[in-house]
Amino acid sequence: MSHIDDLAAGVNEMQRAEAQRAQELRESQVSLPQLLSGWAMFLALKSAVDEIKSSAPQDHDVLIQVGDLIVTELSFIKPYAFLLKGLDEKGHNAAIVCHFTQLSARIFQRRQRGANRLVSRVIQGFAPDAPQV
Image (cartoon, rainbow, N blue to C red; front, side, top):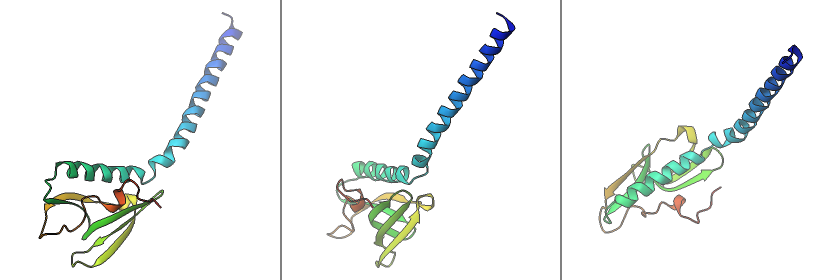
């Protein structure tokens, strides 16, 4: 191979590398908004509730607790926020609105108290036909 052939091969290799970097950049720009949304948090909450619910005895409630709020309804407001409604520690109706990065939830099972459940075993926001804002 001549010097010109070597130079042309080097240029071709640089062009291939640049095209590869451009492709990677395009792919990252497409996936980044999905990674920076609350959808993964919503799915994680749903998965945790489903897992606890599947192993909870029938005489137990499955609850989500955020701070002092026992959640009775959870809504995902795309792409970043959550609206959580429920009962505070004194039994009053209350709500929390937060960015998905601020949400820290505890999912647990607890034996029913009295004849009626505190909340349904199906958290309203997770019902299959529940509207998402």
